[in-house]
Length: 460
Ligand code: ATP
Ligand code: MG
Image (tube, rainbow, N blue to C red; front, top):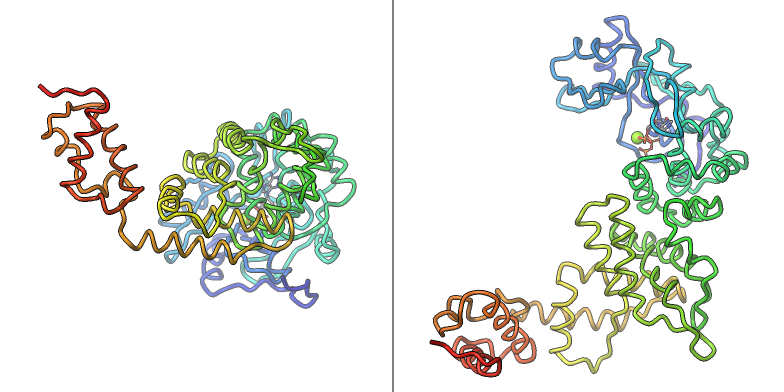
């Protein structure tokens, strides 16, 4: 991240944006770039997501351009397609009555940029830049807060969070993105009003949580969520890890270890699945902790953890793919490897984990090891990885569809259609995982017949 720079006072306006803004100006309207793009420009960060704001009403914007999509017209947002680019444009607005930290109950369009900037969440998110000249407007002393690396609510933080409690999550998320501190009064208001998040839709909360986990400094934002007790409102199962000791080679409690593992997963450039799994991987330790000599054991914590991860992600309305992938990684994070492991055991590991999840599972392991001891045993993991690759490239059967025979061949043998076919194919796969040399039609037919006898099958 490059340091804040005093000379960068003018936002760079490309030719296309200037032409776009001219359409507004020629009809007597103004157009500004607002929010994260201006903030990130002042910080020297890349941000290609431009948000525009204007005094033109959505209907005026629709009349000005050939192709306008009414993306969020109730909130004053439309998407204009201009010279092949999509631009999101929102009419200046003030937000009406708020109830219980829910979304605004009404939106009022207003003619003033100043009023629009006042209703934004934080001083560093309330810059505007003219889309013609690039001149930056800073009505809330955001530049000073950028320089001091501080997230500060605009006006009274209690009022801001009372209006929209999602801003509590946003404060933590932006601190994770920028590695900024949250100003003290703003933090106190988070702490005081965290329960209001109970009224905010889980989709909005989850979206901010994912953005935090995807940021460069997730630990920072997670720590703010914990210190303000917001974590107990949104992820009570994880918050309970506070003070759950592990002893042995672990120097942190379960909660701190979860945060550190998530941070390490970010440091090594992991996918969002790995980062979420890192956060939840030891969540099952809280209920499985048992004294064991001078340390603790956590028997089956990965199975309890898989279950809890599913419960949490379902509650947060994550996608089915996120739920199944993240809980699967948690379920398998305890894998072990020694050079003595047989090829057959390597094949079974691949089948259990699934080829498509192995890279992510290894990243989770590395993040976990880095969190425990600041070094990962990559030599052993590299060896395991090589053995896995050699199994995959050898074309050995790893699933039923790789077998030399199929269901129809079994029916030809007189095995009845239905459950028995599936069971027999599974049995054949087990045999082939043990010994890939068995994967010939002739041999599998023999094994299939022997299996029927074993199960007491008689053909008619
Ligand atoms: P990013 O670069 O990560 O997208 P951003 O600041 O642009 O960050 P957005 O969620 O895209 O974040 O929001 C755009 C702008 O809209 C913010 O900068 C802020 O001014 C305003 N904003 C968004 N959400 C809220 C909110 N809940 N309350 C008040 N203002 C908000
Ligand atoms: Mg944005």
